[in-house]
Structure formats: structure tokens, C-alpha cells
Image (cartoon, rainbow, N blue to C red):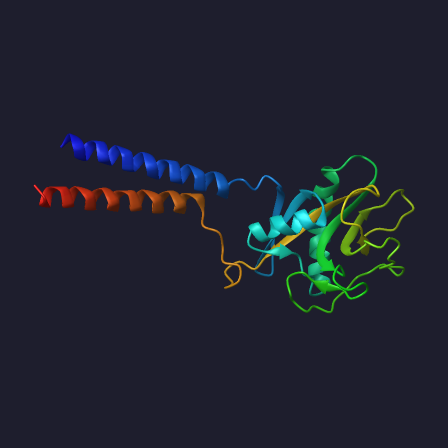
Length: 212
């Protein structure tokens, strides 16, 4: 009996450790600062980062940097996340929202990192301007270098912040799709782990009883 008890205790300890690791991973999305929904999709605003870091985080969340399909979605992104991004920025300086559009593969050929083929764009009249060789990433300008700079439309930007830009990634997740299934809730993970532990303990105890 004591052997069975010891085995149960060890099994439970292993599963508790496993659950702790999984829960830590599932809750470690510290870069997400806002979440909204639109037209059946989930959108998350990430804290300021390079375009590449934002896309990596977007993929870890089950999506990509946003693909903008029409004016309604474009307006939603601006309305949903503008004030939050500005609130997480210094009082002055350039602020943008990263989109999933890039010409990093072929200069001047803009594509969506998601692989989708939306033809919608909302560039400023003088954009994209390619003022630097690596202005390969599109975003919505929320605030310029001064009050005279127009805002609310797309610009091409360098990936990092060396030109003074602070850019926030907008993630789009098509919840429930085959490509981007919804992530399991932490409570579901715990229940699944506890159920697995109970089954394992029961089978081991039954086997020991059968063997005398």
C-alpha cells in the first residue's frame, strides 16, 4: 500500500510540474497590451518592438501581423489601438502601428506576410518613399515628429527604432480556422493534466494489484 502511495505522490508531482511549465508558457504573453475583436477575428496590440520581433510574437500567438482587407478593417485597427499605443509611448516622438505588409524580398513589391493577397492599401500620397534602403515594412502613422506631420495613413518604415520610430505590432488571429486554431484556456490545460495523472495512477495501481 505504501508503495502505491509513493508512486501516486511521484506521479502527481511530475504532472504538477508539467502543468506549471505549460501554464507558464501559456501565460507568458507579456508583450500583449490590448485585445479587440472584429468580424470574427481576434486582434492583439503588442508593445513596441522591431517588425521581425512583432511577427515572431504574432506567430507564437497563432496568427501574423495584420493583413488589411478593406477600409472598414483599416479604420477598426486605427480606432481600436491608436490611444493605447500613444499611451504606451513618450509624450513626443514618432509612433506607428506595424502591419503585416513588407517588400523585404523584392524592393517595391509589397506582400502580406500572412500569404494572403489583399489588394487594399492606404498609403500617404508620398508613400512608400524608400528613403532608406531598408524601409521595407509598412505601418500606420499615429504621430509624427511634430504636430505638422499628417497621421492616420500608411508609411514605409525601417524595422528598428534608429530613426526615432516607436512601432507597435498589430496581430490578427483567425480564431477557429484550421491554420490558426484557438489556444487552449489555462483551465482546460489543468483539467487535462489532472485527468491524465488520474488515469496513469489508476492503471499503475490496477497492475500492481493484479501482480499480487
